[in-house]
Each structure stands twice: as C-alpha cells, then as structure tokens.
Image (tube, rainbow, N blue to C red; front, side, top):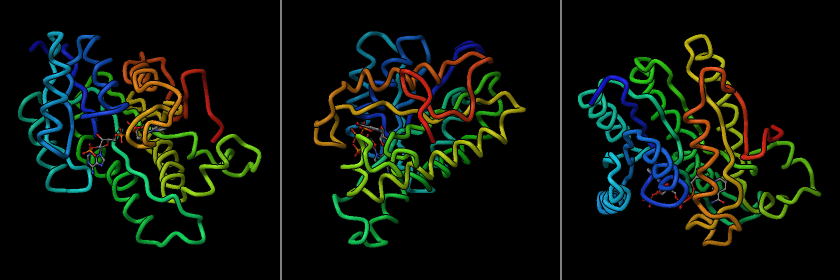
Length: 244
Ligand SMILES: NC(=O)c1ccc[n+]([C@@H]2O[C@H](COP(=O)([O-])OP(=O)(O)OC[C@H]3O[C@@H](n4cnc5c(N)ncnc54)[C@H](OP(=O)(O)O)[C@@H]3O)[C@@H](O)[C@H]2O)c1
C-alpha cells in the first residue's frame, strides 16, 4: 500500500446505505473497512463488495461496545497507521410511539447507538484521522433530525416525527455534535458534515423508502471525498443544505 492510498471506515456497513457508501468509496479506489457488529454479516458484505476487485476489508465493530471500538482503532492503527475517512452510519430506531408514551429506556437505547456510538467511534478514531493529510468525517443524519422540520406541523415529515421521538432527537443531537466537531477540527483541515440520504428503502423502515440505498449513499460519498475547499459544519442532502 502506498502512503497516498486512502482508507475509509464505515460503521454499520454490512447492509443498507452503509454498504452502498462502502461500494461507492471502493469504486473510487479507496480502501474500505466494513465496520459491522456481526462477523457473518460483515464478511458477507465484504465478499460481495470485493467481487469487482475492490480493496474492501471487514473490521468487527459494535459502536455501543467500547472494547470493540478500541479494538477496531488499534487494528486500523496497526494495519494502516492512519484513517482518512470516517462515516458514522450505524443507527437504529424505536417505536412507533407517541412522545408522551415513550419511556426513557427506549430513548436511551437508541442514543447508545446513534449518539454515544458516534462519539465513541469518533473519539477513538480521531488520533488516526489527525494523521491524514485530508481527513473527512461524515455523520449520517436525517431530515427527521431537523428542528425546523420538527417544529413545523405542516412539514412532510410531521407524521413520522410525531411517533419517533428517540430516532428524531438522536439525529438532532447528532447534528449538534457534528457542528461542535467541525468547529474544533476546522483549523486542522478536518471537514465534518452531517448528511441526509433521503427516504431510502432499507431494513430501517421495512423498505418503505422511495429512494434506493445507492441513491442515499451518493451524498455521503461526495462529502467523504470533498476537496479542501469543501464544506464543514454543514447539514446537507444531495440537492443542498437542509435547515437545522
Ligand atoms: N433509510 C432511510 O430512509 C434513512 C433516512 C435518513 C437517514 N438514514 C440513516 O442512514 C443510516 C443507515 O441506515 P439504513 O437505512 O441503511 O439502515 P439499515 O439498513 O437498518 O442499516 C443500519 C446498519 O447499522 C448497523 N448497526 C446498528 N447498530 C449497530 C451497532 N451497535 N454497531 C454497529 N453497527 C450497527 C446495522 O447492523 P446489523 O445488520 O447488525 O443490524 C446495519 O448495518 C442510518 O444512520 C440512518 O439513520 C436512513
């Protein structure tokens, strides 16, 4: 491997939008690490993506398990010495349930993956990202995390937001986290953005989405490979900024 060869880690990359983001980055010649909590599913996705000759490798990674996160960071350090791209993609949802009927335990469970998982992985990978000449962090958010949308009862998302408190607010938190990382890392040239893939048919929504996972992955691939003049601290969909 040459020192110019880029390496990307994608969490929850064994299926859905994460897998398609992996496919897109691998197609650009980037070495892609498939982070997956289940070895069988991770290996299967890795084999599938390797089929075209891409450099795709499985890395065991449960974002809610600090031991697993540390082991992944140590493995990447020992194998590559640095990380160029981190895509925080893994997420879960809960419900549907009205906000007033949602117990704290349901919210806590979703935050373990969607919020604390992102912080744990980013914290562990940051020393490796800092060794890259042009590190990029992409946080897979959602329009359902937009406070502007949540505050608008006429928005197209209001039907979902009224029954998905854990998921929606986890993505609002993720957006805030994105801005704070971006602010801290701007001076170091590390670009950090939140993206929304749009409503894609995946297991997360029992395939009710109207876009393909591949279409959803495109914006993540774009931001993961943005040039040094690319945005940071932004919340972006394929067709431009999303209101916070
Ligand atoms: N689909 C949409 O319409 C849509 C819209 C907006 C935003 N998003 C966001 O896009 C991202 C991908 O979602 P998706 O639709 O592709 O969902 P998905 O098909 O359900 O995939 C989610 C991925 O996250 C993994 N995961 C869950 N918990 C994990 C953990 N603790 N550690 C590691 N991996 C874990 C899953 O692994 P397992 O296979 O082991 O469960 C799976 O690989 C998420 O951040 C989601 O919020 C999706």
